[in-house]
Length: 61
Image 1 (cartoon, rainbow, N blue to C red):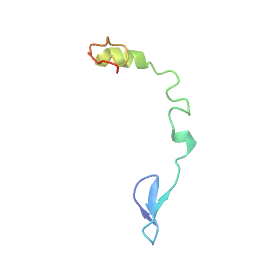
Image 2 (image 1 turned 180 degrees about the horizontal axis):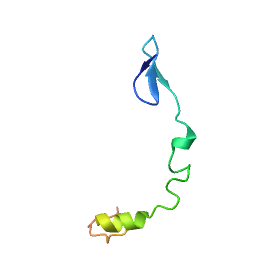
Image 3 (image 1 turned 30 degrees about the vertical axis):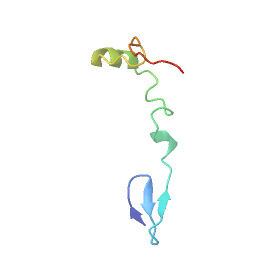
Image 4 (image 1 turned 180 degrees about the vertical axis):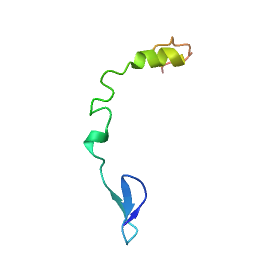
């Protein structure tokens, strides 16, 4: 098999074969982000997604 990426390979018929990553490599599930302060990151970057005031003039039909 030819390696395309960490999760994909191609076999000799050129079909794409998926191989799942180990669960331990997922930072959302392995606890790596458990104590991370995402709110502080947003403040440092002045990235206020979801908390900003709506300024649009959309009209519902």
